[in-house]
Length: 285
Image 1 (tube, rainbow, N blue to C red):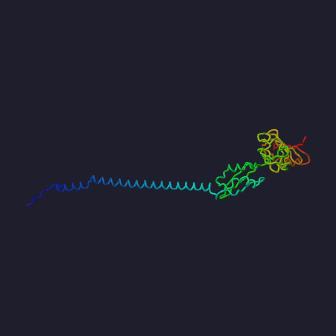
Image 2 (image 1 turned 180 degrees about the vertical axis):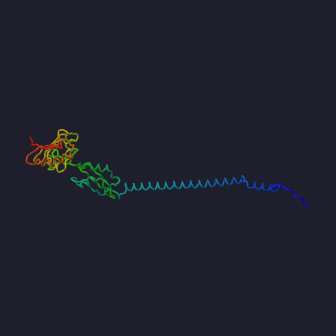
Image 3 (image 1 turned 180 degrees about the horizontal axis):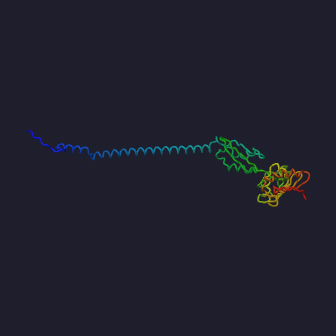
């Protein structure tokens, strides 16, 4: 006959308690499992790092490839420009000449024909054009494949200086441009030495440069003793103009035109435009 015993609430027999403890031990991670997980994480990290490294190497190779390709293209272009006869100088186009002829400029540059355009430097063009004193400045540009364009700025003649047998045309810097055997009708005679270091010549040059072409062509002779005492005579009635310094040149030129009309052509007058606000016209005494 079996005996039934009343057990307290929560009482567990030993076999059940042992089973529960064994299950908890089974659920606890082992050292081997931890090592395997760590290995997987390390391998994944190494693969990711390898991918980044490989990507960087590919990018560097691409950059180096582009750079080397650009350098190679540049070297090829330079070699083509400096060595290829296909890009050599064959034609010269001259712009801006007036008294100087285009043929004279082309002839001066004849020694550069056949040279690769890349070797036709400004210095070489300047050396070739140096004998042409009429040239004050120039600019060049290349029009491939065979043309050099030269734009000329000529020196402006301001007057003539008398010599023993002729008249030498000069510019504001005293450069001798050409010779005339009779007095030009459109240029004044400068009655001082054409020395750019001379204050008198410098003052005259500044005044003549400031005169409009139509007024300059009427000036017969010009002289100066100081920077502030430029004087000149006019063709025809031989009016004497007291100009003074080179200051206020535009105003003086404007009032001189009106004063010449007022003075007329019958008698020689002295026209003082030293102060353009108050022009004085008087008879020569």
